[in-house]
Structure formats: structure tokens, C-alpha cells
Length: 168
Figure 1 (cartoon, one colour):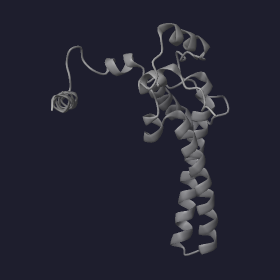
Figure 2 (cartoon, one colour; figure 1 turned 90 degrees about the horizontal axis):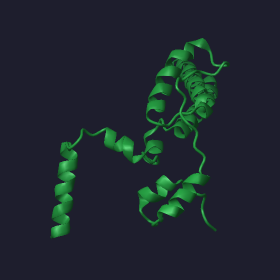
Figure 3 (cartoon, helix red, strand yellow; figure 1 turned 90 degrees about the vertical axis):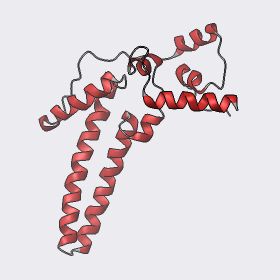
Figure 4 (cartoon, one colour; figure 1 turned 45 degrees about the vertical axis):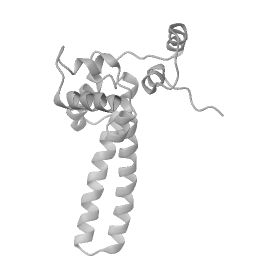
């Protein structure tokens, strides 16, 4: 049974399958592309205390090409879950300091639930290291990070290592 259909950029990045230009164009025509918004605006239901951080994180994600209007609610849910996790953590810590085992166990369970919600939202948005590793960065973004004609030290060492391996 075949797996889920992968975006054309993922297939090309893996290099496991050669696509002709016609096949690639046909696949890209079938993919859904949502343009990034001009401005990051928090959802109406999100509390005012989260707006500044929402705009900061949203702008970083937008500039990286990882944010669209469809992601607004997930980012807002991340901020709310993280704040509730922090509150539950303080209450669990207080119960532990007071040696109230029953209350500590209850708040630790609540804390765990909010942490899971927070982590799931972070994974979806690319806010964690492992989720960013699964992302395919378009080639023009990767090249924009490097100055024209200049290579960083890591790239030079990698190229020399590859040349030595290919030659010997």
C-alpha cells in the first residue's frame, strides 16, 4: 500500500525518483499552495497578553515561509497551552514543596496534558528541532542565506572531505 502523497520538493530533495519536467509540472499543478499573509494578525479569541509574542513568532515563521493564515489558530493554541503548562508547573512545584503528594500528582497530570498539547502544536508549526528537520527548505531560501560566491568554513571543509572521499 503506498504512503501519503509527498510534495514535489520533498521527492526532489530526497533524489530517490527522477521526475521529468512535465511530470514535475503536473504534480505541482495538483498541489495546494497558500500564499503567506502580508501581516501576522492574531485570532480574535486570543487574549491581549499573547498578541505581542504571537506577532513575533508569527513573523519569524512567515519570513521562513512556514506561516499562512490557516496556521493562526495553531500558533495561538500553542501560546495558550504553553501558558497553562507554566501555570500548572508552578502549582505542581508548590504542592511538591509543601509535601502534598495528592495535589502534586493531580497538578503533574494537568501539567503533562498541557505539555502534550503544547508539543503537538509546536510540531505542527515547525517550532521544534525535529519538526524543522522534516521540512524541505526551498532552494532559493537556502541560497539566500549564503553570500554570493562566498562559502562558509563548514561548506569548504565538507567539499574538501567529499573530494578526498571521491578521489581515494
